[in-house]
Image (tube, rainbow, N blue to C red):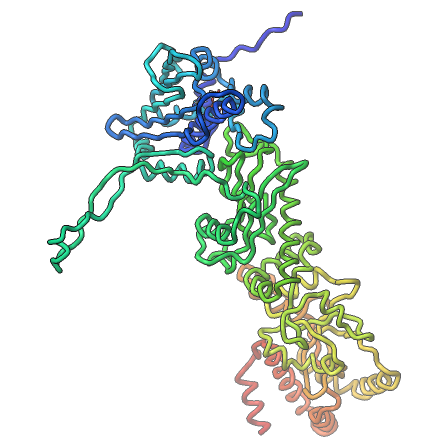
Length: 639
Ligand SMILES: Nc1ncnc2c1ncn2[C@@H]1O[C@H](COP(=O)(O)OP(=O)(O)OP(=O)(O)O)[C@@H](O)[C@H]1O
């Protein structure tokens, strides 16, 4: 059976092409400029093999806006189009002369770094109909004498006629649509808007994009005016050619050819920071996925960093043309502070160039970038401690959230990067540093949670551990304990809160016996105290961890006192949680003697003492006492 070809309703198709593919009308300029760059690349390619008498410096793209005639003209001195090419390329939807060129010359174009053909789908040109009611394309093909004009108002079709054009190349005249209520098409005739679009999308097109723009300068003063002290300088307007694009993508240069100053300058201009970055990461990767990436770690926290407004992501370029301004998929959340860009020719763009077709390549790039960022941060940690600590002050919280989020899925990726303040070193330390210093008999990595380092320094629960020479990590951010709990162990050493029931301290047989004896002897006293506290604590017991302080609160079970504070402070959380609190008494303290004698002589006193001690312990924990008036009266009556 003979196969039949699909037919296409070309008018409908063109309409779809123009009105359904793109989300932003402004990209039409990116498409027309990219075509001009491709056309120049093609002629440049020819000059490499035959003597055309043209050198690379001769090439340019020129923009001219005429507000009165409402035309925007884009001229290039590239290869141009013959009559047949105008018909084939601009008369056939999805016919890409550029793709064909690339395929035909694929072998010879390898290693030609200064040629980078952008077009591939054969549709970009028609995007100009989003903003133009009529388009004229005047073109003279290199090596031909006759020029032709292609003309169309869109869906109605097109015509190709002979025309006069002196120079080789193409001139595209867009007749910009009249403004409507919703769309101010006239903006595409304004110099500043055109400049903005070139900077945004086409800044790295490697040929100059020129425009004759209006400028102002101070008029030179006459001798007479100079002598006049009331003279105010006058300004005059003049016009001058300006190259609107930067042309050279700094990230495509070899690393050795870029100075630190250039890297920093680029960062500040591109990512609107006034401080130099803390770290520059420039990487050119070839292989399964080929890409260049230029990444920066800011030296300070952006003002909106820890808010919902902050948007993570890297700029994504394909052949130097901007595809996405903030590609979020390129960065994991815990590295969301990284700014920068990725440029790759290997991306499968979708037809609008606003998105990617497959995220497989993107994922592969993201995985490699993550590894790279981590190794650079570790390098900073190992070679420039001071800088790393500053970095950690800025973004450490994000890394800690990274360890905790998604049920700890990424904890292994970030745990080496985390730092906590150490009770003994009096500075930020890493987990591995802690582990390397652990005492021989030390079972756990100890941590203490509280409001501030100063408060934790004095925390009663830490006394015994410090006495034994154990180091304690201070957790002062709300996220800290959650992150530590989810990491659970480092080098097989588990974490232990200084307030948890079993501290894992080896006791001698005598110590053990003495503790058990005391517990047994004072069983009734503790039961009476527990009763007096009416369910506020699950247990009253002799403390193993106190030395000079009379009491402290600790907890049994998964929820610590610090976690109770954090969870209950979340505004939307209606299910209040409660830690299983334990009141610990220092059996070697005078207060304990007082308790014992009260228990023998005056049972009501025990009730009062129990409440007093419980409230004291609450205050030490940084928690409010439940009834401040009762508490203060109790102290007064005691005095
Ligand atoms: N300024 C120009 N000079 C020479 N040829 C051009 C010019 N503009 C367009 N063309 C030709 O017209 C073809 C179609 O252009 P169009 O922008 O529709 O698609 P493309 O650039 O090939 O692909 P894409 O849709 O990916 O941009 C191009 O491939 C090229 O051959």
